[in-house]
Image (cartoon, rainbow, N blue to C red):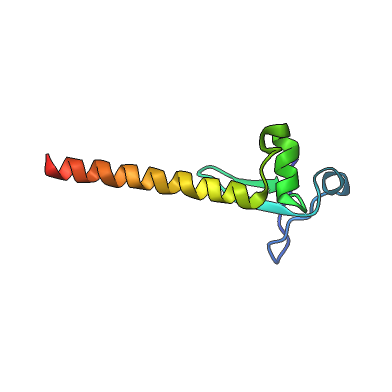
Length: 88
């Protein structure tokens, strides 16, 4: 499918595309092109549907806390490694 922008830079998606994928999209600039990715009205619900029961037991706050802990541990490990490399 090929579409052009209008004089204001807008792209109009056909009705069947909007019906299938929704009204909201994330625009991602890649080195060779631009991609549109549909955004769910409820992103967490969309994620749960996409990954099945992988997050069945976790609530959003729990998942955020777990992600923050993992990032903090990773940063601490990198900092430790840099300190050891400077001492060597």
